Image 1 (cartoon, protein in one colour):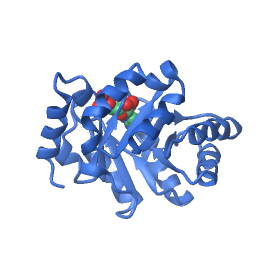
Image 2: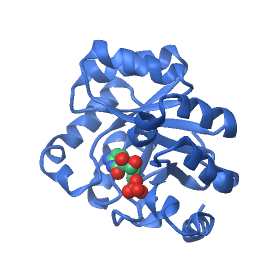
Image 3: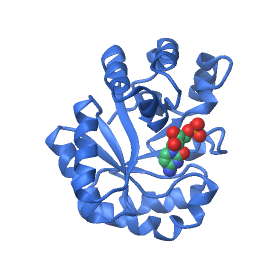
Length: 216
Ligand code: C5P
């Protein structure tokens, strides 16, 4: 997976219109976006279809899927039918639940990202004690793509060591949550950035500043 400028834009905006306004200005420098509940619950899965069609970019749906296998299958099926290229899936629910998403993704020619550890402070409370086991489970299952936190680089490094150099690791938490772009890219293949770009008065400049600050 080649992520242009190693930056994935988190499009956590409330309307498709706003997402399009942002993408009209930024799409030359991006080929991958992440769309999650904020946009899809407001505008439906059509927002995924629309962004995909309009910009031809890769769309990762961040639904942090965490249900029983039968329900996960339905969630994944609807997501890929809408045009998503990849789906972010929680690992803590266990191998059968993640496998259900992986099988459904493969059926659609799509991919999954296994979420190991989240980037916010609360992740230390329940998720952190099991996040390395989640990464190990992913390796055992043959999963290629992972999500890990840019806010705890010691842990991101450990996740990288577990999944190996050939796996693809993307990392949110850069900017507002405190993660540094270049430091994160020492371990991650690409960073996920949301508010630092779309909330800036000048999103084009904000994106360009991040691009300038990293070694490509
Ligand atoms: O606005 P900000 O750059 O903090 O956005 C980070 C994005 O990454 C949000 O969409 C958030 O839901 C997501 N995310 C995260 N930590 C994870 C997984 C996803 O912050 N472990």
